[in-house]
Length: 300
Image 1 (tube, rainbow, N blue to C red):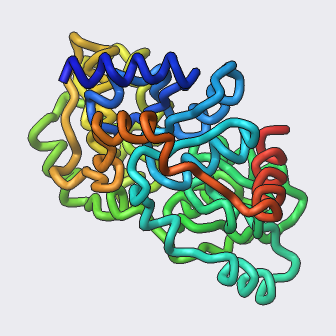
Image 2 (image 1 turned 180 degrees about the horizontal axis):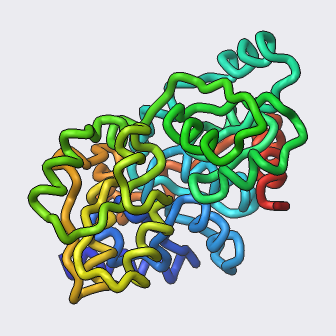
Image 3 (image 1 turned 30 degrees about the horizontal axis):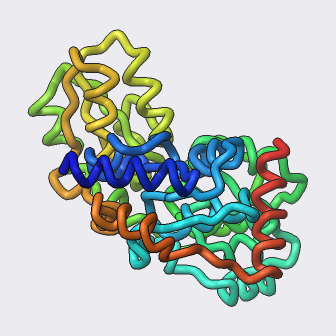
């Protein structure tokens, strides 16, 4: 493994590349990354570097985000078929249909979506800023896509708007049940429960804290508690144990694995850098529309 890592580091220097890894990636991928974080946070960091090449260890929509924010850089996705089932649940045609049914509504698009869907939307949001983004809009009707659970979570804080929620979800978070919570409370009675807003409302109701992956990490780092049950993809536990070696972390469910996030390997990172393969290319018109939606969010 060390020989392969050395080869990756050598190629990275020769290509003037930066390696980004999402919190849900395998430990060895997080270890070789220049930056580890949330998807949009990573794209923004990459934009500010002098790198010519961005190697995004994540899923397809994340690499698209990086290309949208850094159109002049080469963006590589080590495993071309690392996709996102939730992002695939909605199409630009679905957005057009929703607009026709609700012409007075603003379309708010979660960044966990394709560039084409972003281009068909009015503004993007992340799980950490969704409440702020929706609150900033003058429209009283909000079409929230594609994650119904995140949309429901936002609606709790923005009472003066009517939400039309698209029926999409993240299978990792949506599959967490109330029974999982009750079992975790029995097994770890002194632990705090930290969950992602992509979880179903009944799970969010029972959590001690709800937030994005970065917010969950920040909460755990700053908390005086020594034990936590974590309700998001299991890859985050590697980062948590690095930052808080004296604290204990437990998975809320044994099913918290995103197969697409685990597709990236050291070999695939090496291959993409060596051959400069799996480049992200986006249609010019789509790129322009998606950039407008992202930049409206970033301007907040």
